[in-house]
Image (cartoon, rainbow, N blue to C red; front, side):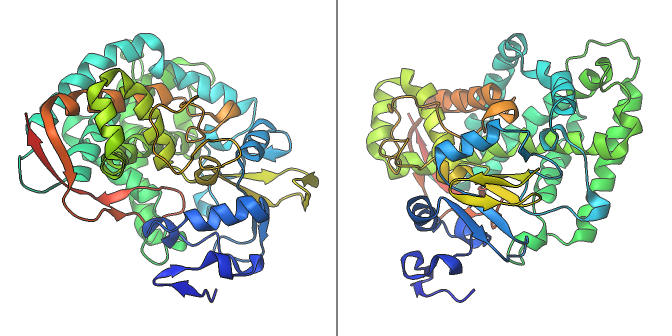
Length: 417
């Protein structure tokens, strides 16, 4: 679309509503999305875009509307996809986040125990030990990339633990996660070609199928995600359905990686942008859990989830037809002025600080939310103990992606106590 621009940024206030393009991932790459969603919340909270690289779709941008749709699974289905882009016919994977009850409930229940309170308690010491080791190795007074040295490293190690994945091969997990969420059809030409994605998906399925058969009947306690799938009657034979097995493995890899990894990086930026909040949390480390929730809101690592209308329905004054895509913009709901006070401020003492949409709502609320929060809490507990300063040493580089709002590079410099 032909957009008037202020500098290199589209001037959303000057465009007719019909010319707004809510499918352009460059708004996240160059961080100019705030104006677009503020306009939609104010003037067209349920907005139809008739054409885009992802086809026609509705955008829902207000907090309460997003929650209402999340909770109405009969009218707004998670099938066939949770992303704005439909998978190609030969690449449709079945995963429980893209299913409706009762199938969703059965498959989610099989793996939910991995983040049960007992397991989280056992994970805490391991996470703290690894975090301390990573931070102790960081250089002082010279720039380094926080994404590579801290965020990616720590989340990769946690993923390997959750899957009991061979340690020497652990980087496969984050490589695959990046690959699966980087389809060139919605990355303004900066993504990965289809044949490369298929090649990596095939390698991932092959490796996880090998691990399934190696562990089947080995008598070990079902503490990892593969053995948990094997132990549950509803998923005990999932490996026999490669599309479903691959879909759920992919879901668990991406879900265990992106929210945590990109919030780990985002927090460094926000605390530099709002030094008064850094001063508060240094003076009172008991604020760290609240700060973690505010980091996750401010970052909103997954900008959207998509639903599909199962019937003609009137919603928000608009007529949505059966089969229409309905995109729930969490990144907008998390900044909805009608629900969230001072949404553009990074405010770690805000009331109801956990009441954000970054983990979704309803039956699809992220099952790993407590683990993600714990990883971030430990990171900041250990970081603030060690470093007198944590400063940006250059501009962050962001992903060009509609589904993942994250960072490819974050230059940082630290000084120790």
